[in-house]
Length: 97
Image 1 (tube, rainbow, N blue to C red):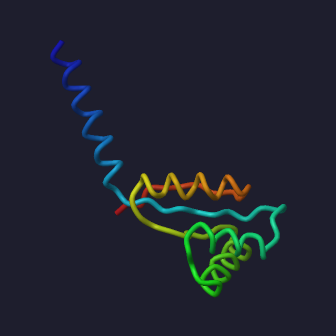
Image 2: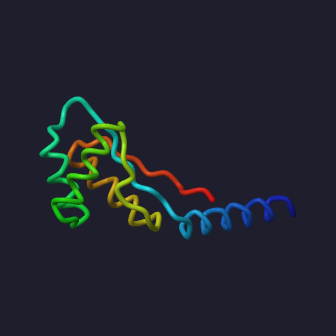
């Protein structure tokens, strides 16, 4: 019984740590979306000026991916959902020290 309590406590601590850690939102290159569309969606989702959105889009196009935002997990999840809602390939990854 004692080990059950210890496991629950460890799980709760890990979940709290995940929520407080920093996450990257990554957009990946795909063969479907036009560069102008990717730029527009980055502008709309993140509120970036056109120049920054174009720079991130070019990084996606040339390098295959780009970290487009970094911050808390909950916001990262929302951004990934919005990007995927526009049919962009996007994911989030925890930043490790």
